[in-house]
Length: 625
Image 1: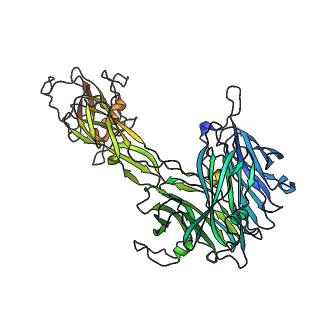
Image 2: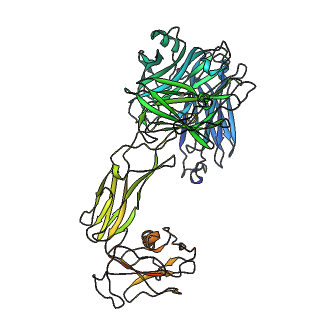
Image 3: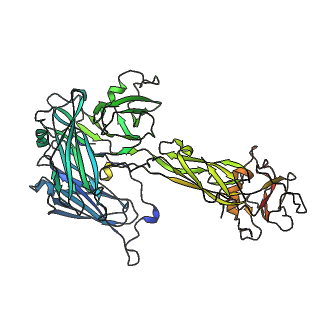
């Protein structure tokens, strides 16, 4: 941020590439791939120039190029730079100052891996305080088929500024919208305007336009308004583009700028689609900041939402009801300064001036809703408007079965649970929202996760969700492209298990050294490093059970061992190491048969695990390996 010239650029942090993928230099045996990003530029006024910042995230130098093009893809300038390891180079696109073109494209390319370079860019005129993001994105795969999608540019402003935003008197905004086709095929887009009038949503459909490959088009938004009968309209509206194009083919840039080109209120186009809750990474009302949020209900039915403000020490629930196609805009300061308790009695303290937020359906963060939102942080005193560049599409990060390795006796039961971990930290139980199946019903059956043992053997139990749930994603505008939440899915998970008789026998306490298996048995014993060791060194019993298998299965359920490949002991309830654990295995005797040491009686419930020798029947290979 340069407050003297009222310039602001906001970019997202990036994860460095893994060491294994960092560039090692191109050789005949190790050719490096070619990477290309394409972007669009426009000149709000004649003195706008641009820049591309290239940060090398690897330990090897990288040579990159940045080429500028006009609206019809004719070259304007070409720059080549070498970026030192972990260094940054800024390429000034000075040719934009001398060209008569008002829109065009930028192509950034380098040889290496996709994440070797962090690439950010912008447009600026420090003399008047103009600054905007120059979007860059990866070109779509040429094999991608066109699909019908919708993208919404929310809260565009035309006419005098809204009094709630506290801009100086006389500030008048003009909207703009620019798009570029970065694919190899012509695409079509049909614009539509949506606005609120007398408390109701109104719309106007506009003529379809065709955009040639690598062509840049600046939309005549004023003419759109005239065509919709809004020539003298003053206020906010939404511009929606209904496209027929491969996903990611269109780069979009839009916003509102005042007559001095000082206040630039950028609007990031959002993909319109069903999703769960959405996380807003940052809001601020500190030091003259405010955060404007615009929410649009694109559905054919009314919806209820909850906008939750999170801040240090608490949260505040702000309910929102939207009729079909209705839009609601508000400043976060309206909430924080209202002093009105929420439904839980919370009031935002005066000390809370920044935080994060979440937009969710009224039934909770995992409710599927159809909603589009945009937000921007602006500061009237500093004449800066910087968009919050990342919005999280909340969803599951992993689906797991508890336990994914299990054992159950013949005629016994064990309850399986299907759990979904969300990026928000919440675990949701999907056991009763899934279809369960057994790979071998003669070994075990399953009903709503309840596994019943039928006969000895190995079995796989699988659960497939009956309801769609969304995967987590964090589409970032500053990384390029238009953020679109991924479609929901029907994830599944399987668990390996075994049915059979087993018994855990307690023996004398304080067993020292290595115990000895009975005649005909094989086994492991404790080493001085408190690990299980197979005497032969092969680590595999004749029955095919590996040490890792025993550790995973007997683990914390029976022996108190950690379920890791190293097989370290876990301390007992008193915090001390067990004296000795010993695992023996052989062919299973029949029920009631004596092996010369004891008579085997089968019990599906393990006994307490203190100083044990474990007799394990080899016919129950536990995890099915």
